[in-house]
Amino acid sequence: MKDISMTEMLEMQMDLWKKNSETWEEMAPEQARNMMLWMIEEIGEAIAIIKKKGEHEIMVNPKVRERFIEEMVDVMMYFSAVLLRLNISSEEFASKYEEKQSFNMNRNFQQGYDNLIK
Image (cartoon, rainbow, N blue to C red; front, side, top):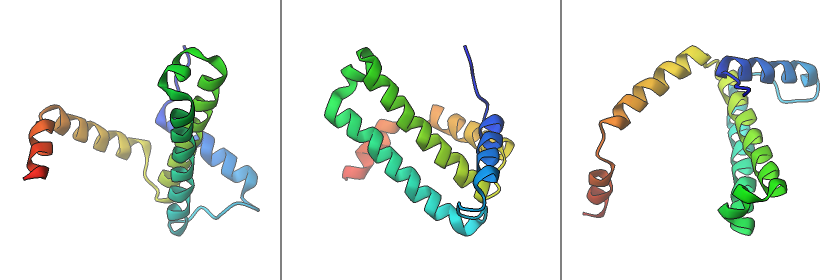
């Protein structure tokens, strides 16, 4: 089974940008916001598939599943573009991810939700 690391995703995204750098937005922090907006649009397209086809179809219909995965890949590509523009390395991201995971593993989510209602 193929697996792509965060480092590989960032490298692939940088290669794609280099190939298209003359016509694409520059690799600058000021462009991160636009990449986030494009990412949100792709999330909306993935949500539309869930709304229109439902989770069951994503699980059993190969065409729907393929289209949904394609939209999720688009989300990840824009996510990578944001990290690149803000110069966030895979190591920096992984460290923060592990820190947040540890925090969440010890977190009482239900209590947090209950406190929101009070």
